[in-house]
Amino acid sequence: MTHLVKELSESAATPVPRSQREMVEMGSSICRALGLPKSLGQIFGFLYFYSKPLSLDDLADGLVISKGSASNGIRKLQTCGAVRRVWIAGERKDYFEAVAELDSLVEGFVGDFLSPRFQLLSGKIAEIQLQLEQEKQLGNLSEEDSKRFEKRLKQILRLQKWFRRALPVLKRII
Image (cartoon, rainbow, N blue to C red; front, side, top):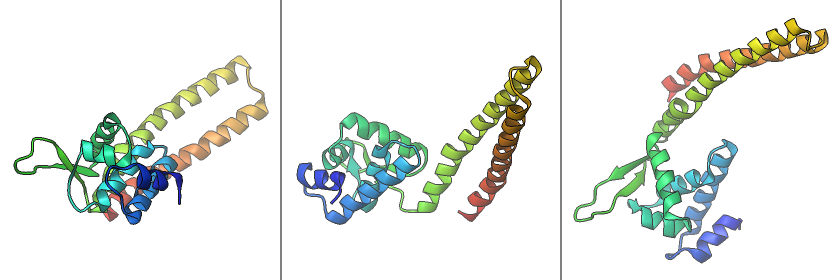
């Protein structure tokens, strides 16, 4: 049993079924692998397997995280379309549920996470190319280093170009 799964089973106010704990752990692992906060995966995994919408208090208690962390995670997940707010008659609290259609989640991830990062990468590559050119002119780089750096930049540019072509195709497939 992983640390998180064990912690959830022992610390949560209400017992969390093992399958749900494992989904929380899987979501956490996926987010860590993507460089995202693990709490995003925990929150999504918890909501995805839960049968009814949950409040921030429910999430914080069930996941043994702070209400602030739950709130930040929910906000980020709403932004990328992975979670939606639902209204419950007679309740004043906000309740949330995972979007069951995973294609919406992937589309949001591509649009809100990958695309902006590729735009930032374009600017950074241009800066590096300019810096490389200046260093060549000043004689701060050997011919060998200059050629190696240029070759590596070309590889990065090819990869970036491939991703730019692949992203629209990926969005259509979804």
